[in-house]
Amino acid sequence: MMDWAIWFVLAGLAIGVELFTGTFYLLMIAVGLAAGGGVALLGGALEWQLLVAAAVGFIAMGVLRRSGFGKMRKDDAARDPNVILDIGQSVHVDQWNNVDGTQTARIRYRGAEWDVELAPGSPVQAGQFIIREVRGSRLIVSHQ
Image (cartoon, rainbow, N blue to C red; front, side):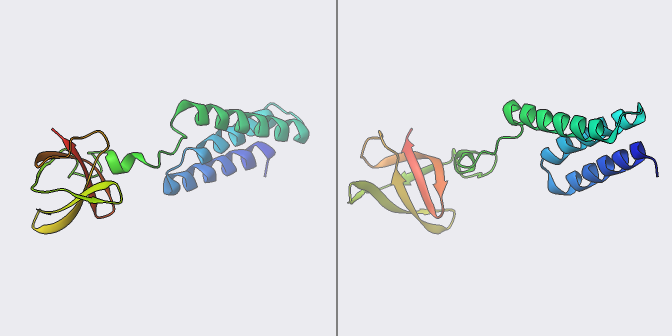
């Protein structure tokens, strides 16, 4: 098999695996492999093929990393209303309890008992609150 065909087959395999993983990094490796195939197609030596494939792959991965598509957001899901539909909903708290300096309460919400914690900076008083975050089975709320 010709050198350029091997490069392009490897690039195609990387794209195929990329479809199952959902990360864009394998796609950037595939771009590097395709660049190596391009050098092979132009008749470049194996050393140049490897050098171009590695350089283009690393540069493409660096560009992806800086673009924002390659960055993983870890803590945003707990505050994202597109992920947790309870965020933004209103709840009523009758009484707050001070536990180790944290204001907590127990409320009935959606047919179940929930632990509620008051977000920093919110006034400690009974009334209506908005769910701002969900940490496990604890609702973090702030005053409307």
